[in-house]
Image (cartoon, rainbow over all chains, first blue to last red; front, side):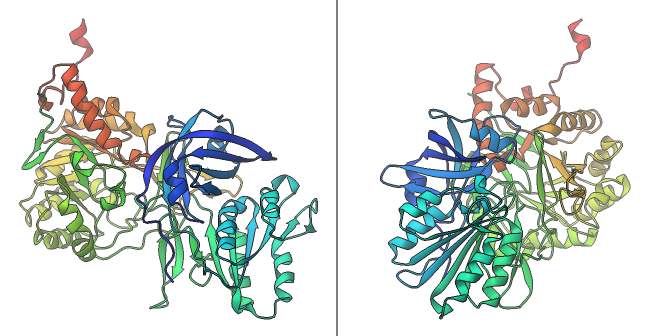
Amino acid sequence: MTTPYSAYKKKIHTCPVISNTNLVGEIYLMRLACPDISAFSLAGQFVNVKVNDEVIPLLRKPFSVCRRSSAEGWFEVLWKVVGKGTKIMADLRAGDSVSVVGPLGRGFRTAPKSGMALLVAGGIGVAPFPFLCEQLLAEGVEVEIFLGAQSTADLAMVDVFAEAGVPVTIATEDGSTGHRGLVTESLLKRLSSVADMAGVHLFSCGPTGFLKAMTAISEECKVEGQVAIETMMGCGFGICVGCPVRVRNPRAGEKLYKLSCIDGPVFGTREICLDG
Amino acid sequence: MVDLSVKIAGLVLKNPVLVASGTFGYGHESESLVDLQKLGGIVTKSVTLKRRDGNPPPRICELPAGMLNSIGLANVGVRAFIAEKLPYLRSVDTAIIVNVAGSTVDEYVEVVGMLEEEEGIDAYELNFSCPNVKEGGLEFSQNAQVTAEATRLVRDVTARPLIVKLTPNVTRVGEIAQAAADGGADAVSLINTLVGLAVDVETRRPKIYTGAGGYSGPAIKPVALAKVFEVANQVDIPIIGIGGIMNLNDALEFLITGASAVQVGTANFVDPATGERIATELRDHCQRNGIAAMAELVRSLLPWDDAK
């Protein structure tokens, strides 16, 4: 199956901010008005945002499409403040606007009307999952969410999944919510109770170390999986060639580089080589 | 009526605003974001004899008003370029300048020789100045004699306009520019990136894999202008100015200082329509200021002495 890639041609949109909310800790959810991006983006795709008109910060920053309503013409991005750009975004208010390129990249592959999908997030890697969850449920797939975070202050969107009636398992490293430890431990426990892995599919998103663990789990437990990677990008649409990831070439067995922005950010666990 | 066209050797540009090599792919990537035919020309991603996978990540990092890159000339190779990329470029109504890179002089000659068989190429830009590959690249344009010889050998295999792209990482860029002219170059383009390095103090690793890389963006514009100024005072062949151009004002500074045309680089990552916008605004600027042709702007820098 080929990875979905929106037929809509990316454009640069000036998007008015509808709302910008500090959900918890340093995590923010911003709703932006854009009929095109809301209508044509796919789960797992991203947008590239220029937070102001200045040269510092210079480059756009990529954000997963977190949720969207094509009927109402908006989409949302979820992020954690980590540097200058994300701090400037946190200070934006309704009525401000930002320049957004999108939708970009290739989204998650979903197999309609079958099996069970386990969505596993490391920290702010939860960002693309509300959209993916909605899409999978609409396709008749059974969904369970696993959220891993440092602490309760790093957990977002829990209520959104709960409202959708989806089981949510939480692991925090400091034990402030749910299982004390790694989310991969919670996931392995869940997988140990699954009799037939054939219908199971793992979707994960988060930091590279976590995604490495997820590809290892996919291999050991013989579960199909896809990972959405977080990486630095220069442009977001293939011209700077600055965001390579190692993938295995299925024909020759050799490794080659693909670009996270146009070939990803979603890759199959069997394809991607996070060890370099 | 303003005439924005410029002529560089045999190369006629509809306007003096080009997009720089390595910042615009092979054109098609940005077709929904920019009206390509509004550009004065497209300089392609560097083409080498064999396809190159490029350097390991991280390849880029952001710095104040700029960025550091070490892509490593990742490209599809000349055969795939001819088969897969050139047909699209040919269909765009603008000047197509193919940037050529290599590890040895023979490689430049061989790549240009293969491209000579193809129609729809308006000029070559020789990348003698990439800081991010182990051999070739930078070594060429840091040595005047090598620059002259390499230019001459490529000159021998083509009658198409030849532009030599220069590095700022030298003591006297004017001497290298003169050497390119002596070797038969029709024009020089400058500057390529400044060699730079940034460190992550937490991990104590360089922010990009290769350690040092190429610094680009608005931060380097003053350096670029000074190098263009130096070359303009030393050589007679046309100059194409490059370095941190983000807007019309930046482009005007280069033209006035001595560039006959400019290339927009890093700005394309933020907005590939930057060059298109500058070309439109340049026309408005000329109209407002009664400038009829580009020759009235180029090399029009006035010394302070005149003001006394």
